[in-house]
Image (cartoon, rainbow, N blue to C red):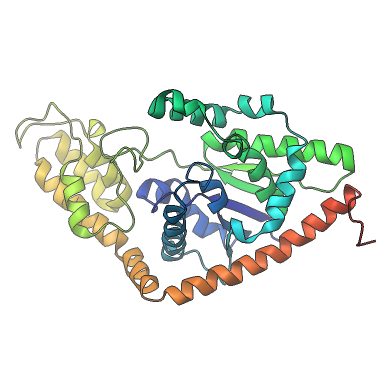
Length: 336
């Protein structure tokens, strides 16, 4: 029996190359090793976009297309919508009795995100909603609803998986062995830096290359990438480790990387040539993904069907878990 893996993705915008090399490329490989569930977490996206549902709805379809375009195969995996699984919401209610508000506020991921809101919105950032603070409980419901045994995460998400493990342990200690305690699967790939050298690539920072970017957009973004500031003239030697262009060559340029590094150090290549070479390699690498995106954009009825069938399959699985949970809690009044 293959282990079950649950991956939840908030629909906050299109996937960029940071997502791809940091996580989603690995998701594609997981499909042959595990029983994979890919959750589009639209309910969690509403925790900080509750006043902009159209944005969330649009992003749901954009994310679904991105997942299909990178190679997530609905014949191998289950792609579903969180909001289409009411069992998750019901499990969230039951689990909320097992976690104190103090514990939620101590969760490092929650603390960090609240701090970010305060930095962006000042005192208004203190007015976080119950849904926002409590989303680790909802995430525990996501994982356990499908008896997830492994959860692929980045380091910043480890506290959320640990919170889930705590909830599972407490539930099982009170009601008997019912739920599986999941394990976090930490990706081996480091976080991909932004074009500006920032340790984080993101939409709000304006330093990302997206999987759906056109060649002209990629051209403009790469031409503005940070290079070694000490390289003034074309023939000046430079340090490739201080150059974001070389950083991305290591992702996209394969066997050419060694030559790029050597010529950069020896002052044998100009930055413009180096950037144009990178642009060509990025466009070539992303072309199959763009072609698949175009196909699904022209066949939205197929995307809709995949989401509907995936959500139906996911709900069947979640309903079994909920039935077992209610039986353990002795609130299965009409199923005895």
